[in-house]
Image (cartoon, rainbow, N blue to C red):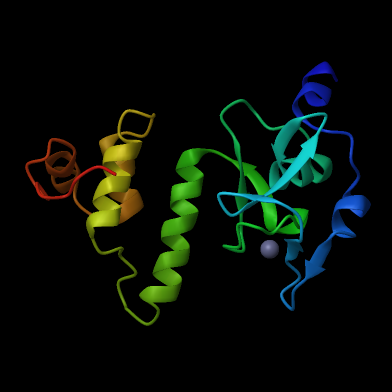
Length: 161
Ligand SMILES: [Zn+2]
């Protein structure tokens, strides 16, 4: 397992958990250093994203294009039960599903509304694999609207961040 030992520090889930505050919804809230809000763990002068480490310890090695995705929206959480490996597209799908759940709860059609964040997300994922049809399904909008967004014929004023 050369790949793993290079990629992840030798630390156990028990050691990690002992340095976390367990929240009422069972998030393991890391008490140590953070990097961009994510739990950071330094070993031998290298800093690791700790949620990737616990995801690895519980679920094994990721594929090259996979990230450790939170199901709990808590960046500093390192509970492996709240983490799974997934692609950037799945990450965006999760975020949309959660946003739909929290902000559009009660709406009947369940379709995501277009807003500047969605426009930026569509422009960001275009070229990373998904087709226009997949993006359209993902956001619940027409193929035509997706191509207008990508080619900046619609939502012209939205700047990339
Ligand atoms: Zn959590």
